[in-house]
Amino acid sequence: MLSLGRHWNGVAYRYEPTRSDFDNLPAPPLPESFRRLAAEIAAAADMSLDADIAILNYYDADGRMGLHQDKDESPDSIAAGRPVVSVSLGDTARFLFGGLKRRDPVEAMPLESGDAFVFGGAARLCYHGVSRIVPATAPRELALSGRFNLTFRQF
Ligand SMILES: O=C(O)CCC(=O)C(=O)O
Image (tube, rainbow, N blue to C red; front, side, top):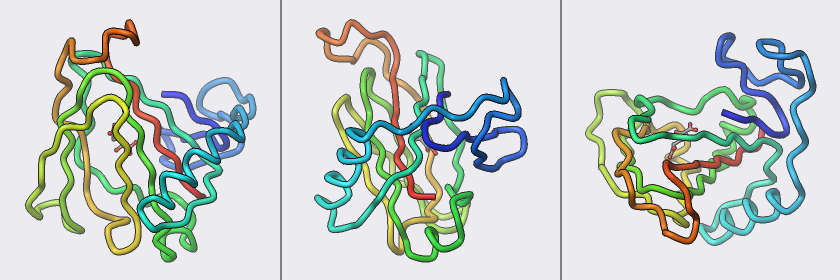
């Protein structure tokens, strides 16, 4: 995992300006081109996002992410329903998207390389996760084994 803009501290479960659980260095800045890309994708879904955080996750063939809510951005951002914009690169993921309660039914969908998925507004706190990676499905020209996922958020 790499955090840009603000560091996600996975021990304390909070965003912070410096990587206190790692090397105490400031989180690298979010490139302006990333901020623009996230805003354009959000706008295509009729939402507004001025991202100040990007989290890059790498999944190998065994990678997965349990069902969870993204609820550690600021209360104002969550209350405004500012979307999370997710961009997938590489191998296809089986992505799960559920409801506001962990036990709500989930929909499973493939997220392929180049797909963007946006959830905001009333869906901002929906549970979601990745149940599996489909190996060897990345476009050949990426010469990539595994999957990168970038999520953009507004703190
Ligand atoms: O990899 C994905 O598609 C989901 C990522 C995710 O749920 C997260 O970063 O909170």
